[in-house]
Amino acid sequence: MKLHVINTGLFKLDGGAMFGVVPKSIWSKSNPPDANNMCTWAMRCLLVEDGKRLMLIDNGIGDKQDPKFLSHYFLHGNDTLDRSLESKGFHRNDITDMFLTHLHFDHCGGSIRYNSDRTKLETAFPNARYWSTQSHWEWATNPNPREKASFLKENILPIQESGQLNWIEKKSPVNEHTPLGENISVRFVDGHTEAMMLPQIRYQGKTVVFQADLLPSTSHIPLPFVMAYDTRPLITMSEKELFLKTAADNEYVLFLEHDSVTECCTVQHTEKGVRIKETFSLESYFGV
Image (tube, rainbow, N blue to C red):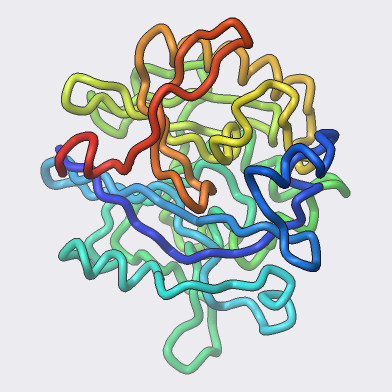
């Protein structure tokens, strides 16, 4: 097995929305905002090369949305999904499994693209099985008013119409037995959105956990630092507390999807609760 970081670009979101009730005077020290109160975030994905399977975890915002939509998020940087895949020696047609942690547009927008003459939407990974979970799919396709702007039907419905959609069963908070291979389990969390999936990958004697939006960045490790985007913030806090204790006890490597500076970290127990132990790139830690 090999793990590869796939960077799909940077975008901006409102700092207050990203840190909820935490005052700007505190969060701005680690995440300086621009004149519009916007902070820069990554859309960092993970490619899992496992025998004949090539699984991509999330795929960024994509490029099919109209300029007005994209202008709200100030996309920038030189990285794209295709360029990142190419740098690792792969093409989107090589992807066998497209794993979607959840269906918010900045995580799944790259799932669907226009055909060559922009007359029809099609799946961007024609040879892949797309993985979601049924309870989250139903949540996303019948969205509540709070999340409706994040669940874009053009990102979601064509997946089902393609016949490429598959389900991961939510049997327990951690599903150890998944169809993704013996080294990949899935943790389910419900605070950010219904049944968000966090892949847990056993790799070189360690457990690497893809954080999605449970822990968007190292700045979100203290328990009160919870996004205003979360539908159930108190549940997020309890899920984060339990997970971080487990991560510290077991020396998990946390892969950060949205931290614009730090790819990965480990955490440790301190008198103030669980805090950062080390930060590092995936390559420097594992030598991949």
